[in-house]
Amino acid sequence: MKIEEMKEQSFPKISVQEWQEKAEASLKGKPLAKLKTETYEKITLKPLYIPSDLEKEEIDQFPGEQSFTRGFSKGGYIEKPFKIAQPLKGKDQQTLTGKLENALQSGQDTISFSVNDVSGWTYDEVKQFFQQFSQKGFPFYLLTEGYSVPFATFLTKWSNEEPSVQLEGVIGEDLLSQGVAKGVIPSEEEMSKFAEMTSALKERFASLKTIVINTAPYHNAGATVVQELAIALSEAVYYIELLQANGWSVAEITEKMVFHFPIGSQFFIELAKLRAFRKIWTTICRGYGLDGDSIKVTIGAETSKFTLSKLDRHVNILRTGSEAFAAVVGGIEYLQVAPFDEPFGQNSQLAERVAKNIPLLLKSESHLDKVIDPAGGSYFVESLTAELGRESWKLFLQLDEQGGIIASLKTGWIQEQITEVMEKRVADLAVRKQSMIGTNIYSDLQEEIPSVVSETAPEIKQQESIKEMAGFTSTETIQPLNGKRLAEPFEQLRERAKKLLDHGEKVQAGLICLGKLKEFKPRADFVTGVLASGGILAVKSDECMTIEDAVQFMKETKLPYYCICGTDQAYEEFVSDILCEVKTKDIPLQIDIAGLMEDEMMQEWKNRGLNGAIYLRQNLLEKLSSLLTIWEGGQSK
Image (cartoon, rainbow, N blue to C red; front, top):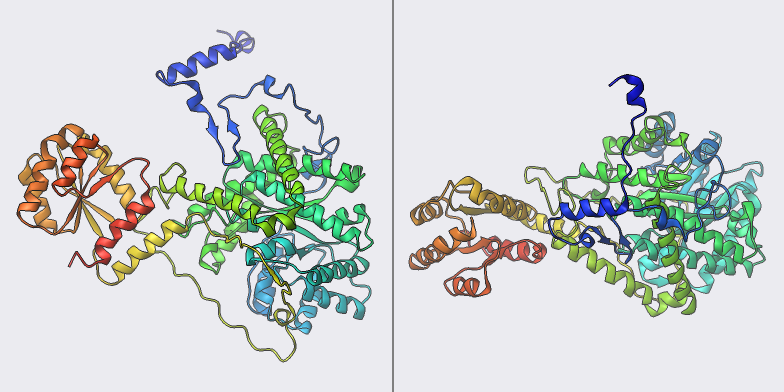
């Protein structure tokens, strides 16, 4: 074929019917519905999306118009690049100043740090710090984490002393979500302080945004994307009505608003979340009579703390990289990427550098700042965006019917809904319906797991500090939403195993491998992986062709626990005799089999001394916890 003829060639057009037939054939008799996935948002993801999926949807032709689904600006990042806002840590002023100077010289373009780390600073220290960095031309992105009132007091005092000073960016907190994490509702006095603070800062710092809606406490407690979006809208309405009562116009309020979203591990759902937010936020704003630029709000994002794990911690780099990618594609203005050792309480220099380089890579190597809404037009993404928007709007209306965000938190309805999802997430992780690499699957028993760094007490100051000025005055408690990382239950298993190792215990399990390698390997590998996720090392036997081989292996290894691995046929031939040998010789150990057999046979073996089994879709948290008690009970001595 000549080159000109090749140019005229094209792929044959395939109909949806033909695709379905091929897909069903590949499933070997299983229905096509097997390829559908139900999300925690109760949205069904299909294996194929086609133009007809969008026939009933209103899709924006361009960014910066209509529903703003595709972005608040026509030029996307070309017009307004996203900012890298890594929150650096430093307990003293010198350390934090040095870190920020270095970060700003090596790619970071926003001043951001952990406010909790500077809670012991005095007014003079804060003033000196802000004087130094406010002159560098970078915006601030500070989520003040319970210290918004004292920070505002410091900034107001400073601006009175130096009226010409100006700050840009974001300095504020979400009092409601902060309260939910602590189990309190801000009192009227607290919210009155907030309104006064916000009004004072509006007068002195025209370019500073101070009204933050932060869904991280809900996300970290297990909330779905739909719950996050509905709660964000409900909180926004609450703040709008609060500040309207203090003389603000709705346009003035939205101009000062920042929505801060955590970005989880479900790539397409998370990027669609940001697109859906802009769509339903536009609906809210138009309900208040706003249009055009008055609708546009700042969106900040952080990679999820919920998805991080202490186990195989370098996998966190992959998690945060994917989450950062989703955030950028979804459309944000500020991005924070968690260092891979974040769960340990203190970040290493390497982890901070890698975290900062992830958004730099997305900008400078992937050139995501040179494209406008790259996900736009995808049948899947547009359909998912529309569906998330609809479901979020329904839940928002439910919250409104119950009296709004405050009333729903007081009754505990929101907390119950989120707790239910969290329990489902943990259950799915326990049975490996959901996987976390290095945590519940492909665990690395050779890794050194660092200890959690304890916080040191701050130096005592003569001048009143930020922390001393902060105080939550709420008198009404609510059911708290306890945020925790999804991996924590498996981390606790590994910590139990580590304690045993530290006390000299050999946390090892014997695998009695029946027959030839190809016969026992699938189940032996499965059991090895399961045991590793609980910190238990599997010791495999050679090929056991006779009962004597199995018994000899147990005599040589002298372990308190064994799991028999082989084919169903091998089990029928060997298991009863192995159990009989153990019982006859009165050997103090427990035995499981890999996989499940018929109930009648399992019961017969249990009557002969079989402990149980390790099998697919088993609750591994319960099983591994039970197994660890074998060594904790000292049975291996």
